[in-house]
Amino acid sequence: MKGFIFDLDGTVYLGDRLIEGAAEAIQELRNRGDKVVFLSNKPIATRQSYAEKLTKMGIPTTVEDVLNSSLIAARYLQQVMTPTDKVLVIGEQPIRDELRAHGIQMSEDPNEVSYVVLSWDRQFTYDGLNDLYQAAIRGAKVIASNPDRTCPLEDGQIPDTGAFIGALEGATGRPIDLVVGKPSPIAAEAAVRHLGLDYHACYMVGDRLETDIKMGNDTGMNSVLVLTGISTREMAEQSEYNPRYILNSIKEIVNL
Amino acid sequence: MKGFIFDLDGTVYLGDRLIEGAAEAIQELRNRGDKVVFLSNKPIATRQSYAEKLTKMGIPTTVEDVLNSSLIAARYLQQVMTPTDKVLVIGEQPIRDELRAHGIQMSEDPNEVSYVVLSWDRQFTYDGLNDLYQAAIRGAKVIASNPDRTCPLEDGQIPDTGAFIGALEGATGRPIDLVVGKPSPIAAEAAVRHLGLDYHACYMVGDRLETDIKMGNDTGMNSVLVLTGISTREMAEQSEYNPRYILNSIKEIVNL
Image (cartoon, rainbow over all chains, first blue to last red; front, side):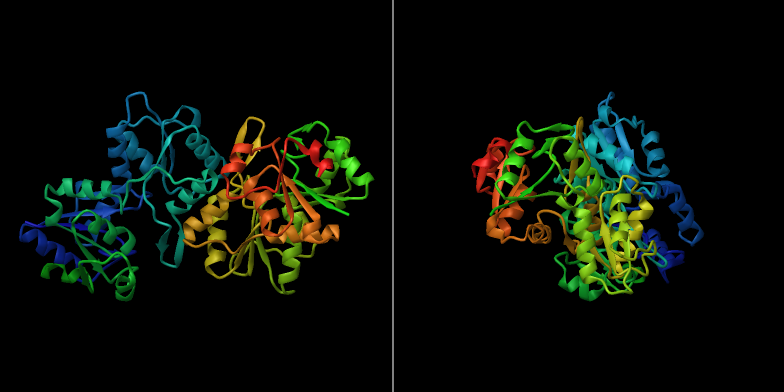
């Protein structure tokens, strides 16, 4: 039995358009008894919304089939926080909801938090930056949901969590403590544990060398680059992150 | 004849308190025919306000005796911009006023600017970050007023322009084009030209190793660290930026 961990945007769909053959390929994997999970770094949408989107596109998906950086952050904090610890969140409603659903105590006061979750926030302000900085210099551990510099939209890209990481590091002069989304081994472990398989039985399938492929390689999974998203064959050949397989699209996944 | 370039906060005063003996020392330099100019990286106050503050503290100062990163940015842009070029500004009113006084055309539209001035802005928002990012990836040159990570206040520090530089670099993955404030040689040249002297006849006097002392050393000035601000003798001994002179305070400057 094999396990397939699929990135979403650029791998299964592009914006609102399904990659041709994706639904059939995933159905064939499921029919033959392989396991499938979806793993997204995007912290501004709920797992439920991804499940609904995939289902509408012809890939029947439950919320349990979807892992994202918000869920991984919530589970990580559950493991490391004590009952009196509180966390300051820079992020939008979906990640706050996910943390709350996992019983994580939040606070807006940088003086009383022992953790900061740093995520994509399109309402980010200087006051938020200052809270973040004050919490960090007082010793709170800073955990980023994902390291993505930008998020692609239909007509361009806009700054993602990587910009906020840069802002904090620009103020403190030192790196943040941890990223839990791809390419972190914490994200890999969440996916592999979800599938109930060993790393070497799993295939990490995605379109980004520096997240999907790096994480697959770092953890001993089979890394699979699809050329339907952001990375090209030339980029893969010049990169330090060499995919084990390169496919024109997810359609070819059934041949592995 | 010698020229003295004085940093302000931490060197001449600490917040609202004059460093003991500063007024007398500067008066003695002036009496013996040496030249004095003040050079600040801080982009959120006007040169006029510094001149008034120094005058009230017993150091008679005109606006022409004060250089700051806003003025240096304005003069730099005057030299490099063509009449049709426009600049997007992330910054507060004083730097906008300084640019306007130098005839620099500004625009809020990231699509039509060929330069970005990136400065400290306590009203910074995600939309501003996105404008900044869009201008930068469309090829606008990004000029920062100053590189300071934080600005010290009486009860702590808050994020300065270095945080915004980090945010943009975090989104683009590449360094900004230029910093004009200290330790940039552009700031040194502005001060030395203002004094009308050669670099080797000038003394750069300040409390920060990575700005004041670095710039003095890089440009062949005599660098002078005063121990009344942020850097200690131990920090100077361990730093790659070795001051030529270390003084307990500005009071001893008359002995050089």
